Structures are given as structure tokens and as C-alpha cells.
Length: 580
Image 1: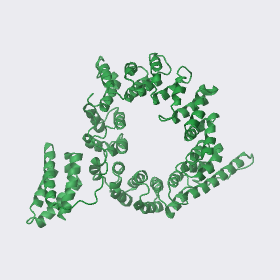
Image 2: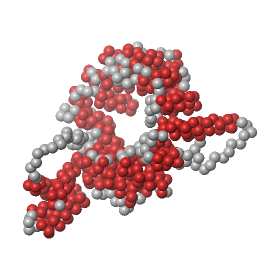
Image 3: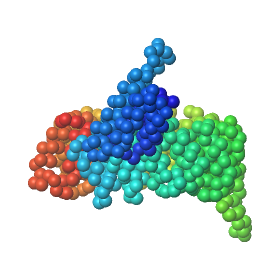
Image 4: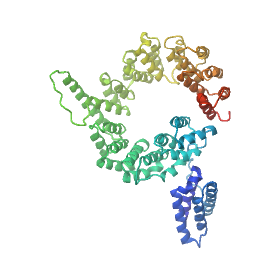
């Protein structure tokens, strides 16, 4: 008993030290450790006086504040380590395994940004959401110095959800402890639901006990949060299947019931399949049930979905025939029923999450009626002939099918992809609405790792009417042959493709382009300013920091609101290239 209590105390002290010594006073786990030590000291104090000393040290750590908090907590940690070392028993090492890799948590936020970010988290005012969002995108929100303000910001009605869902999970175990103890299962307010989501996202395995408690004792808000967390982070974990099924059987709250259906994704029992299929025919639950079926591990789930798809397609065709008859009066559908055509589309969407030749066989004939969703359902399950059929739509004028057609072309290999997609830059309709939609699909499909022949195609289009689509390809391939013509475009302030040229110059990464890009930092066109920001951030060259710093320092009033964009860019660059 003493050994286990001291081990637990050591773990709790270490956790609080990482999160912040000022949190010791409110930490419930540390308070329980002290109570346990007091009890042991009363029983064994004569034989082991060190227990009383540990209890006293724990009391000081919990009761200290200000600068004393850190000193007392470090003293407690030192004493605990000494006692644990004295208890150790020598033994040969066995079963050695590599250490589990853990994400590095440190203090990446630079000093200039830290104060403003702290203020954005704990005070009201304009621009808070944008500042926090930018910090999340940069990654410097995962700073141990921000643990306390992040916990505080979870209570904020404006930024609380963003902080709970996107920021807090980035700190992992460093932030879990303080939040765990603050979840109020009795009241179950919105803030408690946020806290639960954040803890599970940060530490899914270690939060199983909280999820079980929320499902058993929580109100509707906590139950819904727990179920969504299971669906998002612990899909298919065996221990939750029965509790979730129990909620499906008795739940009356619509939001909780739909979340429970989502949480059934990943299970393979007959009971789970029955619950999902029963909910599929209700318009209030059809989407959640389809999501669960799309991830179901039941061996007959796919067969059932394909059979239900056939029924929906036939019913939709029959309904269309009735509608065409002038004298026919369509029967009034039951309340909350799902339109057959909608059902077919929903099932096809669910089938996009699976791979099986039967899916492609079922979806291919439906492309004419169900268009893009049928094509996407077939993509991952199609053979070469079926992919070619889908890719053929790229040469036609059905714009809604272009994204799937381009994806199919990519799957056919580099030669087929180039042969089928490169004509998009030269066909007669390339400047019309349908032609531009085709180019959008091609540009999305051609990745950085694609066939380098694309650079040759793009270079020929720099002076053409679709240069806006060709230039980004040159940036993706870091095509240095494009440097000179792109600099010429950047020199023309009236160019219609100025933004694309700036972006491509940034991705090519030649330092000689920095002045040309930075020349537009104060453009009156906001989209051009953002192009400058993105281009300079894309430069993998630390010399860009000095260029931006020089321009910033040369401003008449660098700290004015007119220069916030330069200030923001400089801080981002200093975070990317520390010490430059």
C-alpha cells in the first residue's frame, strides 16, 4: 500500500510540474494523495516516519501560492524521488522494449507573440478568433506556458469550442490532468462537454474511464459528447459496444441517439447491424446510420447495403414514372420517411468508405442518375476498365463529374493521366465555364509527385488565356525554367495572374525572387497581400527573415495597425527560422 501510494504521488507531482506548479492547489489527485499519506502516517508513522514528512511536504505544496508554489512542489518531487529510490529492489532487466515515441511538447511560441496570444485567450476584444486560429495553424499554440490560459479559454462562449477541439489536444498529456478534475458530471454543462471532448482528443486511451462515466451518469449533453468522442477517437473499441447499444435502445434525446448511431461504427455484431439498419429508414437518423454502416465490420453489412441500394434505386425509378403521369396522384409518404432517391445517394456516399469489386459493379450503372456520388463510390473499387469509363467523362461537358474523372485518370497511371488530362489546357472550350471547371479538376488532381511532363505543358501556357491554371503547376514542380518569365509577370502590376505568379515564385524558392514578392506587401488588393504572405512563408530560405525585417523597420510607424500584416508575417517567419 505505501509503495503504490508513493508511486502515484510521484506520477501526480510530475504531471503538475509539467502543467504548472500553480495548479497544485486545485489538483484533486494531489489532494487524494495527501489524504492517503495522512492515513498511512497515522498507521505506520512510528515505523516509517518518512510518510509523515511526505504528507507534510504535500500539504505545503498544495497550500503554497505565488513564487512559493514552484519551490514547494520541487521540494516534494525531490523527496518523493528519494523515497522511491530507497524502496527500489535490484533485479535483472527483462522484456526490454523500445520506448514509445511521444510528440515533443515545448515552448515554440516566440516571446513577441506569447503576450498577445495570452491576451487573446483570457480577455475579450476584436481579432481573438483570428489570432488563436493562426497560432493553431502555425503549431505554436502547443506551448507549455499557455496551459493555464487555454484551460481558461475553454469557458469562453466565443472561442471555447475552437480551443477545446483544435488547440488543447495538441498539448497531449501535459494538459489532461488539470482538465480531468474540472469536469462536472453532476451538472453536465456545455463547458463540461467541451472539456470531455478535449481530454479524449488529447489522450484517447487514458480517457476511457471518463467516457464510461459520462455514458452511465452524464446528462444528454455529456452523453452526446462522449459518443461523438468514441466515434472520432475510439472507433470499434470493444468495451463501448454494449453501453452504446444500451443507449440506442432507450435513448430519447435526438442528438444523443444520432451520436450513438455514429458511435456504433466499427463494430461487427448482429445487434449493432440490426440497430443501424433499423435507423436507416428514418429521415432524422438516416445520415448517422449510414455513417455507421459505412464503417461496419459485420461480414454481411456490405451485402445488406448493396441490397438496400437496389431497392432504393428501383423505388426511385418507380416514383419518377408516377410523377410523369399527368393524372397520377402520388401517395403521401409516411412521416419521417426517406425519399428513395435520397436514400440511394446516402447509401452511395456510405459506400465510398469501402473497397469491394461489388461496389463498383453496383455504382457504375448509376452514374447517369446519381452522378458524382456514384462515380466516387466506384473509384476505390473499380478495375482498369471501369476507371477508364469514369475518366472518359473528362472529355465531355458534365462538369459535376470532372473531379471523379480526374481522380480516375490519376489511378490509371502517369501515361494515361497525362494523355487524358493535358488536353484540358488546349481544348476549344478551355475559356468557357465548363472548360474552367475541367481545369480546376485537373489542377486538383495533378500533385507534386505527378508526371514532370506537366511542367512542359505549363510553360507553354504562360502567355495564354489559361495561365492562371498553368502557373501553379510550375510552382508545384519547382520548375526553375519558369523563374525568369514569372519575375517578368511579377514586374507587371496590372497582370491578371499576379497572385498566381507570386505564389509560384514562393514555391520555387529562389532567394532572388524575394524582393519581387515583397514589393507587393502593401498592395491595396487584399488577395495580393495574402499571396505575398503565403509565397514568403513557402520560401525555404532563412534569408527571407532579414528582407522582411528590413522592410518592416523602414515603415514610418511599424507598430501601427496599417502594418499588422507585415508584423504578422515577420512573427511567423521568426517562428519558422528561430534566431534569424
